[in-house]
Length: 336
Picture 1 (tube, rainbow, N blue to C red):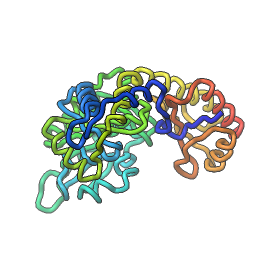
Picture 2 (tube, helix red, strand yellow; picture 1 turned 45 degrees about the vertical axis):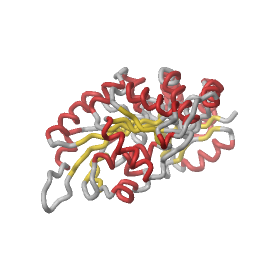
Picture 3 (spheres, rainbow, N blue to C red; picture 1 turned 90 degrees about the horizontal axis):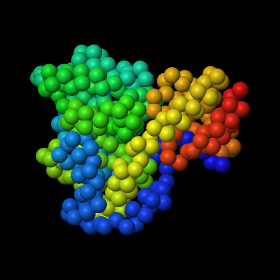
Picture 4 (tube, rainbow, N blue to C red; picture 1 turned 90 degrees about the vertical axis):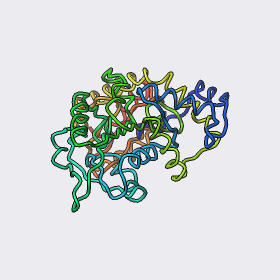
């Protein structure tokens, strides 16, 4: 048995998703003529109450397009110090968008608008002007943390007071929705641009979307092409995304339940905190974790190593109850 808990990106298309992909009607998306892509974009935009969406090959590209729409070269974006945008997108905001970033501390990735206001630079001849704030929900390195809707509303009020834009890195917004019941449209109403990922919890093989208003979406297509993201018969991929939206959002509750069971089972060994598990991510604290990960992999359990003594596990579409029990048995033996 192989139980791959490194990420929720490792899933493979289900038979039904593959059938949807192979039967897709396609065209040239750069010309705007791919029916499956057009349908996916319209469906995703409607879920968030927005006018338009743009299909991209990756979540990093969707994020970077969103940032370039909101922040001019030489101006500033605020985000938290553990955010995906500043840690795992290869400095793209600066390298490709000319965007300066500053960060605030966010324990467990949790948003606190009170920490952000002192960082805001209003237009001034001798300082970098703040133009936008980015928020990650759920928060990856924070451990799948869900941003409370009340704090997001407070952030929107703060942004409006300073005439700032808001970008949501919603790669796992589906998990936040599943965990809280907050409608996707309520999240969409608070942000100017929203990136969402189809290839994490939803199990599609490829693809993300940048969701926004119609005018920004037109500009987003130009930036996407500039970044090399203009795809041709992308409808085969979009069909997987459409299937995921229709069939895989509600089942995320199963991943959350399995993550809770995994964390509660391993908590007695002192390597995780079940109270911190809100969605499908379980953070691990294990001395010499690389050695433990190697030994676990030899017994068919793969975990992600993020530092000398910490890592993570993610539950997802391809891990069932038997897989969770096998992981508990293997890891429990190794750390006891």
